[in-house]
Image (cartoon, rainbow, N blue to C red; front, side, top):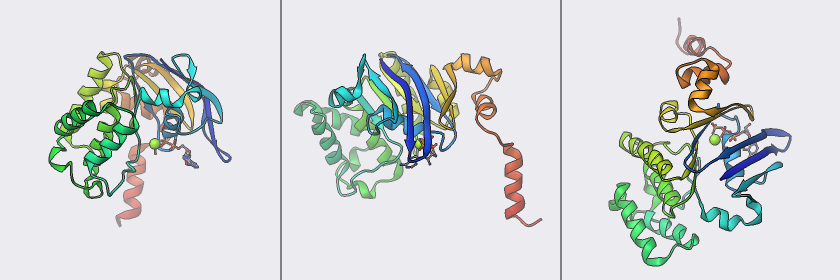
Length: 255
Ligand SMILES: Nc1ncnc2c1ncn2[C@@H]1O[C@H](COP(=O)(O)OP(=O)(O)OP(=O)(O)O)[C@@H](O)[C@H]1O
Ligand SMILES: [Mg+2]
């Protein structure tokens, strides 16, 4: 089980996350929602151990992750928000490097990488340098890298960014299948239609603070909205979206 205990993060004087606590149990898929700049990626970076919290701690199976970050990371798969991939490495070389860093055994790692390159439709591109990959191809490489070592906890920061329709459908089904096998998934996204389908639980952030938390149906019932879009707009968005759109038109398009 992964636990966030009172996590806070200051960047200089900016408080990006304030007293965030939750549990991620085996088999749970937790959707982490919030407007741009609300603190989702900051939380994710603390959960993965990339960023040290200003206050609070991340606990995995009863241990502060800082006590043994290497062992914790071995159980973790992480898809970051931005793909900072080495442009001069081919997709296969990159995956091989990640597998080596994760100490995956040799024959096993080559077999898994080949199978996943096929399944993610990247096999014909495996020797091409990643600098010439499309956005969706880079995203698929990140997904393979996160999955290939059979993680118990998967942390996904906007994993569908740039993916085509088929890939999105595969990932949706994959998340459900991982959860059925007892894996925990922490899923940050703005695509509410997908969140609604795959998440058993929701955490909603506003300006760095948790403002709603519970099972997906509990959160919906509590707010009294049938759709997640309605919940989100009521809790997070202070502006009338139709009015803002019309105001943009009135600025750009002459009357
Ligand atoms: N490295 C940084 N240095 C200073 N401020 C930062 C840094 N990273 C994030 N912030 C600030 O922290 C706040 C939360 O940012 P964060 O990236 O966590 O938001 P987010 O919810 O992931 O947003 P998005 O939906 O746009 O990805 C923002 O005010 C942002 O400007
Ligand atoms: Mg983010």
